[in-house]
Structures are given as C-alpha cells and as structure tokens.
Image 1 (tube, rainbow, N blue to C red):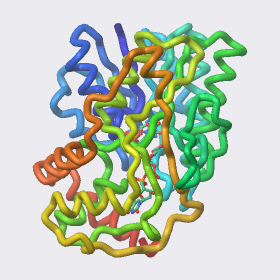
Image 2 (tube, rainbow, N blue to C red):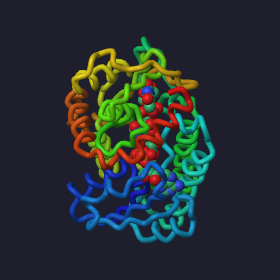
Image 3 (cartoon, helix red, strand yellow):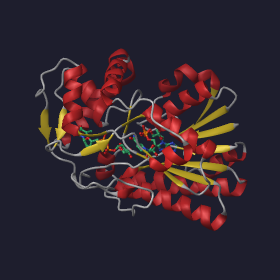
Length: 331
Ligand code: NAD
Ligand code: TDX
C-alpha cells in the first residue's frame, strides 16, 4: 500500500512512521509536513531511507492534490496541537486544522482515496472529577479551547464529506499521548527535561486536572486496527484507562528521577483549563479486538524518562526558548 502521512515529523506522526516501517515492510511511505516549530527531521533519522519526506503545507491545494493522486490512503496527523499556543494566537490553528483538513478532503474526494482522520478527546469538552461517565462516540461535541474547537470543526468536516460526497473516511479521537519524540512544550516532557536541566517542574493551578494517558505506540496500533478493520464513516475512541491527575503524574516523574516529592512550583493556571478527560474505548476493544500493550503508566514514564535522558541533543536546542515563552505567561 502507498501511505501518505501528514504531520509525520511531529510527535505521534513520527512514531506512526516508525511503527509502519517496523510492522508493514511492504508499504511505501510519503510524509507531508510543513516542518513547523513542532516538527523534527531527526525524529525520522532511523527510517530516512525508507520514506520520502515532502516539506509542504497541508493547506497547499496543488501540492496536496498531486500527492493524494499518487497514494492509496492518507493518515492525517498534521495539526497545530498545543492548547496553550492556541490561547496566545488561534490563527494558525484555524488555518491548519480547519483549512488544511478541508483541502485534504477535497483532494481525497476528487481522487477517491481512503482517509483516516486523527483527532482528540478534547472535542467532547471536559467531565467533572466525580462524574462516573466517560466519553463515548455518542457524547455531544463541546470543545473549550481554540485548539479543540478547530479539531472539532475538522471532525465535522470529515463527517459531512462522508455523508454528502461518499468520501471513504474514518475518524479516531484519542486521549493524551506520551512517549518518545514528544515536543518539550507538552506536560510530561516539559517536566522531565526541566529536571534534566536543573529547573523546577511547573504545575498549573492545584494540579487536580485529570488526563487519560495512553502510550503513543498503543495509539498508533489502534490507528492501524481502524484502518484495517474499521467501518467507513465511523468514529472510534482510543484510550487505555490511564486516568491520573497532573499532580500524581508529576510526583511519579519526580520519584522515578530521584527528586523530592515537593520539588516543583505551582504556576498560573491555564485559562479555561479542562478539568477531566476520560475515554470509553469499548467499541474499539469489542468490535475491532484492539487492546493496549503498554497500559502501565509508571513503566511507560520510566521508559520515557530514559529516552529524554539518552537523547538530550534531540531537545536541548529548544529548551531555553520554550521556557522563556512560558515564563512570559507566568507559567
Ligand atoms: P505535533 O505538534 O507534535 O505534530 C504536528 C505535526 O504537524 C508537526 O510535525 C508539524 O510540523 C505538522 N504541521 C503543522 N502544521 C502543518 C501544516 N499546515 N501542513 C503540514 N504539516 C503541518 O502534534 P502531535 O501531538 O503529534 O499530534 C498529532 C495529531 O494527533 C494532531 O492532529 C492532534 O490533534 C492529534 N492528537 C494528539 C494527542 C496528543 O496527546 N498529543 C492526542 C489526541 C490527538
Ligand atoms: O507545564 C505544564 N504544567 C501543567 O500542569 C504543562 C505544559 C501542562 N500542564 C497541565 C495542563 C493539562 O492539564 O498538564 C495537562 C496536560 O497538558 P498538555 O501536555 O498541554 O496537554 P493537553 O492540553 O491535555 O492536550 C494534549 O492532549 C490532547 C495534547 O497537547 C493535544 O494535542 C491532544 O489533543
């Protein structure tokens, strides 16, 4: 199969490329990535001879048309992905997440090419801490931030193109990923690299917000399961029952890195901060037979800490600038 992977030089996309090279040796892979601040070409070093990397914008209609005409499936990861950035400047989020997805949809429609659209549980808004319910494919959309609103809009565009034009697409909404190659602006790598840099970790507010953590390899295995066996037009929720609050995750990181349990600062909370996300992935588990293979969060964090410690050259160049940006926001 010829696979076009948008956003393949970012965190989840690069791990998806590695997964695909390892598990599907006969597939040919083209990565389309605009190489924004969030991308890293070195994330693809180990597979560079197995892929073609096209540097370009998913909203570039002529380029996207040419690439889509020459592929069997598009797996669409490309997005602006960081909530905090979307609060500072929503404009690239609207452009990439909405206009980019629209551009791709028009191309797959023209060429009758299969699409898998990668999305997030944040489209469902948040839950109360004591709410027994979790998100299901029936949960109404109620996004909170400019980031999640543009992801919600992109999902709705995909659904409309399936219904109105018969586009062959599936959608997945996944919970918070962690693992190697994640940008150090995000919570877990920021705290790990702070400790490695001699800086104190930073917890927003009281740290009671709950995220449903999943290892990136489990997410990507689920994506291939949906591509291989999912029903066209359907939405699948991906999660690994990994709920933990931010304080618990940070304290685990500190313990694994031999730091005192209170060696961190409370900083200004995020505006509109979603309280809790929780995924019910039973449709994916029962209908498609997927289950997570890396559901032990503590073990996954230990591996991730080792990866950032062993790969300092991958992240150290960006550290000062990222921390300066956070400091300006009191975070
Ligand atoms: P990331 O920010 O690490 O990577 C995004 C990639 O997209 C980067 O390589 C970037 O250069 C590229 N990109 C951005 N704008 C582009 C454009 N206009 N044209 C082409 N490429 C462009 O993000 P990530 O965490 O790997 O997330 C990937 C996808 O997964 C996103 O769609 C995100 O919404 C979704 N998702 C992420 C998580 C998570 O926890 N990180 C959870 C659920 C869903
Ligand atoms: O320094 C920090 N301190 C802190 O307490 C940072 C960067 C974050 N946080 C908190 C905010 C969140 O409650 O940690 C939690 C996780 O924050 P992020 O890593 O920014 O992730 P989140 O906002 O939950 O969104 C992530 O998961 C869903 C991804 O970035 C999205 O792309 C995905 O859709």
